[in-house]
Amino acid sequence: MAINLSENPVIVEREAAHFAFIEKHGPFMKTAPQAWQEFWMVAATSIDQTMITGKMGIHREAPRKGEPPIYQAGVTLRSLPNALKGLKLRSLPPGKYACFLLHGSYAQLSGAYPHIFALLPALKLTMRDEFCIESYLNSPQDTPEDQLKTEILIPVK
Image 1 (cartoon, helix red, strand yellow):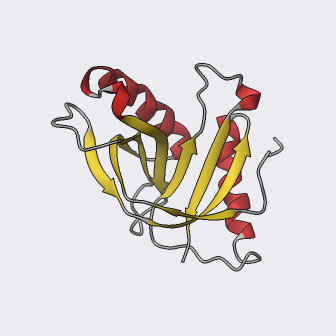
Image 2 (cartoon, rainbow, N blue to C red):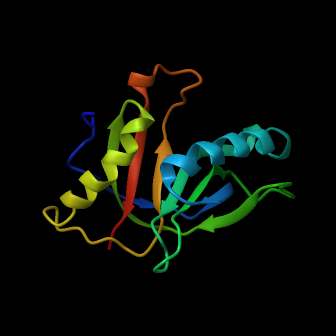
């Protein structure tokens, strides 16, 4: 499958954000769909939809040797909620990211990351020890699959 990905990232500074999420451990292609399905079932009754400022998948390969990858499916929020039943809440730290734009199916994501990681040395970018972020700019609920847009944000120094 050809990957429709920008090869020249934009360097962005992200502000801190409140993040409500469901966390799963294991291979992303298996855990991400499960996490999103569970997240939306719980979020429907625990989050005021007007508080959502963005939809993100946040993940990290094995944080420590021998541990499974971590995937967090969730949303950024305008402010701290009073309570979140069934969801975790954390603060996303501010920081510098290399932002690549992916056009099309989420099925391309598994191939996009190895491609991006191979580009980083030539771009003279070094990763920080932080989670990568997928920021979904539109949704498969109201956008044809070939028109989906996802920012892939790689934490860099």
